[in-house]
Image 1 (cartoon, helix red, strand yellow):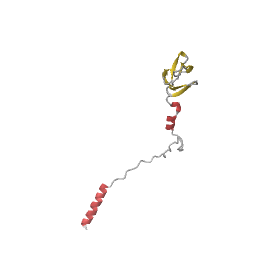
Image 2 (cartoon, one colour; image 1 turned 180 degrees about the vertical axis):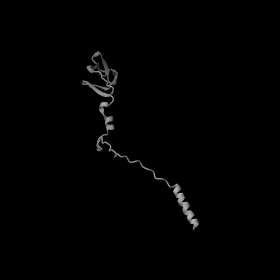
Image 3 (tube, helix red, strand yellow; image 1 turned 120 degrees about the horizontal axis):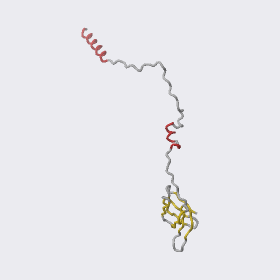
Image 4 (cartoon, one colour; image 1 turned 120 degrees about the vertical axis):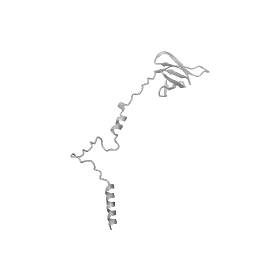
Length: 136
């Protein structure tokens, strides 16, 4: 019996030695916790303030504005046995340019390719946005 009492005492001693003390949580404050101010509604279809700031068009970076030259059709040159050509005036300055189909003309820093020359119109393609311009 004495050995069982010694064994129980040893087990009790070991269990008390390795027992962990409970951690204390944060001390309660005298003031109740303040609720967070609600700056936006809970509507999932509304953009957050961060997204609105990114999408704001007023703060978007301004792009480079490209001014296309004023092109005017001054005349057509039609000769038997040769492809038709046209006279194009650029910004009303200097002599007009004589161009034919499939030629590339550089005016005002923009390159234009002559796509088509007909009796009624001239089609040019090019510029900074690769647009098609029709001169009549």
